Length: 357
Ligand SMILES: C[S@@+](CC[C@H](N)C(=O)[O-])C[C@H]1O[C@@H](n2cnc3c(N)ncnc32)[C@H](O)[C@@H]1O
Image (cartoon, rainbow, N blue to C red; front, side, top):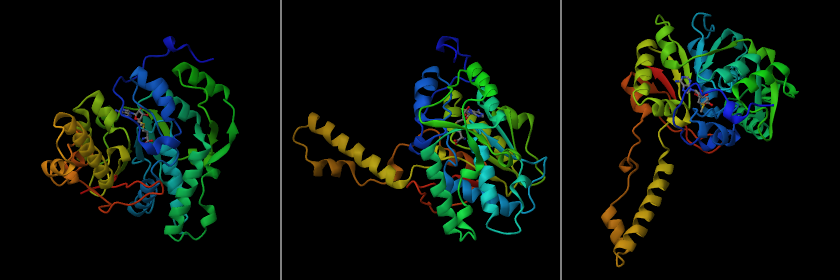
């Protein structure tokens, strides 16, 4: 049985929570779990999913293969920070396996070692055992995403593009896992989720350890004699709440340590607001302003209000204090995709794949 809530271990980090993105509705660690158990305890949200943001992850895997056609040396593994339950790291290994199918002479995914880490010791301990808890719908969406990508890229064998092979059969909670979940106060099973053992093939290139990105970059700087690859997705907002200067310091460390040609992957939570969302938000704000003005000045017409507010442009919206794209540009990173790309789930993913100049 899990520990009573009052006996749960103290969270490793206490910081504020930003509302998880809508894309995380099909999350390996669900929004519901985050809201119910983590938010009230001030623990950084761990919402994640299998193959999260595939329209970024799959092109990132292609770009990694292009940059390192012979694979990556063992002393310069891909670093996946904030890997949560491991989904981010195993999904990248899977994306590397799939993109290898596009060219017959591609190196196997094992030529791309992944050094995965997270701040939360419980998540790391579970991932080290090689288990992940996923949701059927999450796998369906991931299948749709890889199939769409295979089609766009004229994959020679489209039937090979799916996610099923990465999980060995579903399991009930295995004994070593039960002990870990209990010790860290993690749920034994989230509603509608199922535990799976990650396939041996996918686990082979990935190792897990506990790390705070800032402390780790200071203690283990990236090799500077050639390009490196770092994933740090959907976490900057949590870090910002924890310490408002930390995002700046981490961006600076990445900028100093990542050699020209290095690849950095950030998440949708860090991307600029898509312009149509900004536009809709502004229209709503205008409408609310109009309703408020009507109460204060009952005679005011919508036209007068429009004239007073003037023409809207997305640049007029007040900016959130944390602007990750601006921080990264300042440290010498440029986005790979200047033109927004539309994902299978209908969102734009602009400014998530960065190259160090
Ligand atoms: C919302 S999850 C995102 C997980 C995954 N990257 C993704 O996009 O699905 C945020 C994760 O960041 C981790 N985290 C928070 N602050 C961190 C830090 N300073 N260094 C490393 N990981 C951190 C949390 O433990 C949590 O697992």
